[in-house]
Length: 224
Image 1: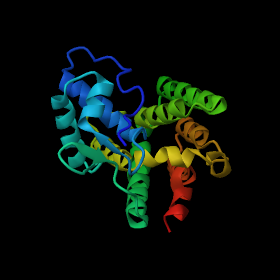
Image 2: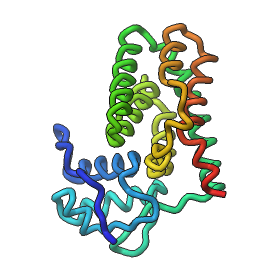
Image 3: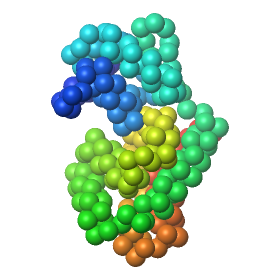
Image 4: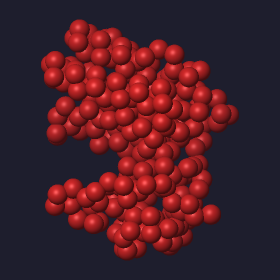
């Protein structure tokens, strides 16, 4: 079945952005935010129709996403999100924890009141999405919070590595949200914000590690 992710064309092109760049950015974000269900094949033609573009920029974008290990090439017309194994999950979980805890700690020198308020505003949006049961908004605001926290420097080495992990684990985030209330009982973002305001690196590291563990750690049991 070829079911394209919803609302792929809902974001306009940035100033100076080519069609090819826009297609890659949209598809990359779609994978990262879990719009491609694990195991479901999609075709170049279906994605091109969803985006309102020709097949050529879609084919190039998918080639790059396959190279990033975000997708698996089935044939010259179809791709899918790779299946998750217990070993692969363990490695991605460990990589995400190590990279994000370190990236958060490196944000401390930049944690002035304006920076903390930007993060707090994103956290409020995330809380509102949770109350409304808006899964799309929950995923997007969570990504936005973590991206803002880790992107304090434009030349960050860690952020591209983190995004690579997000690409590989993102499709499973929606599965984690189905019973998140049972596992995510403490507001770890609030803990991180408090640690930033206090300049407490140890507390910030603990908050981000707990956020990752509480958010997706429970998926491990489903993989055997």
